[in-house]
Amino acid sequence: MKRICARIDVKGDNCVKGKNYEGLRKIGPAGAVGHRAFGAAFDEVFYIDLVASLYRRRFDAGVVQQVASSLFIPFSVTGGVSGIDDVQTLVLSGVEKVGINTQAHHKPELLGEMARLFGRQFCVLSIDAKKIGAGRYECQILGGREATHTLVSDFVPRMAPQAGEILVTSIDRDGCLSGPDLELIEQVAGSCDVPVVYSGGIRNADDVRQAFRAGASAVAIGCAFHDADFSALKVKTELQDEFEVNL
Image 1 (cartoon, rainbow, N blue to C red):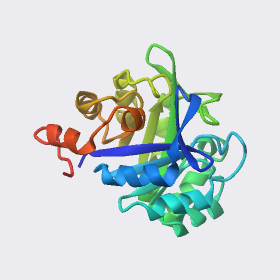
Image 2 (cartoon, rainbow, N blue to C red):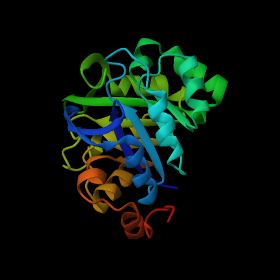
Image 3 (cartoon, rainbow, N blue to C red):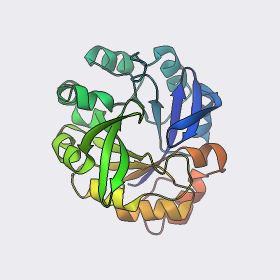
Image 4 (spheres, helix red, strand yellow):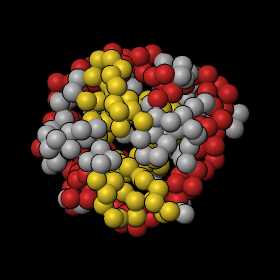
């Protein structure tokens, strides 16, 4: 089953959106945006605190609870998760899945510990990818602000066995509505056996189609959801003859 998901980037208690992870602008209260995603026929919501790790703080549990209470679809949280205590707090807040990004590099054993305690399907490996050359993508951390000097092509095979799925974001396409990075999708999907959720640049049904054909199991829509009147139901209807989708 292919999924079309909403992406909610947050800073404080507000949903924000930028371009290439820069110039963040306020969209509205995170809870209200989450409820709008539910009403817009998205299959799932990816909630990502873009600055928690950068500021070395935890996610805002109150905001997470507010968003969770407004949703009746699966809901995952990434950002500000530094240990098992944080994961347990999120579980109690009603979150179905938890992702790590920065800590996957600083404390790579955390993902495996999460998988042992909560099940592999609960764990999301989140990767912010920056293109640095032909066929070469580097993992970046701290909200896309720090280079790791680790290639995505090396990192995915090493970490994927502990994850239930991988959320990969093209920093170069983020907020640009310029279409998906198909080479990035193919590289990640071709180097692991877990579902790949792609985010970055998707504008319309044809972009979703191309991402699915490249190997993505799901797409996470941010800018087009907030600014371009993206209709998940309309896109699913258009693609249902080619892919299995949940109408």
